Amino acid sequence: MALPKAMRLKGHRTFDYIHKNSEKYYGKLMTFKIARSNPKILISHKNFNSLNNFKIAIAISKKVSKKAVVRNKIRRLLQDYFLKNFRKDKNHKPYWLLVNLKSSDSCNYESKLLQEFQHLIFKSGLLND
Image (cartoon, rainbow, N blue to C red; front, top):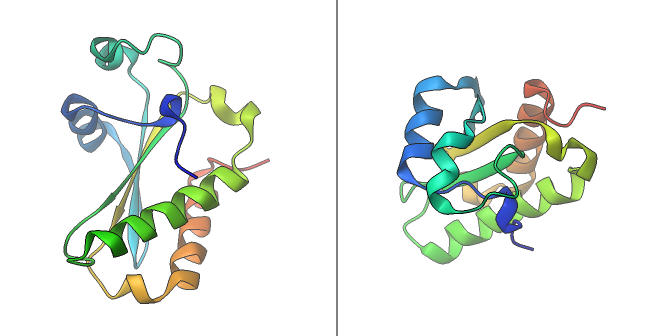
């Protein structure tokens, strides 16, 4: 299942903002960059309903796999895990999350990838009860 449009990050200004103003969490296979939302950046995208909601983007480099099919499979796997564990009442948190996969052989270890994703989500405090 794909992320709902209201939860997607888009635009180069958004990613520049996250890279400059984020708190970073590192793992062996991926990094998390979390920044407070800045709705002024998203006004140009004409999505006024969910400017201050929680948003996420998952970026997977070609260094992880040259095949787009493999990268998309990993992206869908992480998105599905996130959506299954994300509660609607947490959507009011004004944070933007960027997940970057590091270049490694992570595409062969789905269970390790999900374990680290879960660990970093809880370490960052996004899905705490």
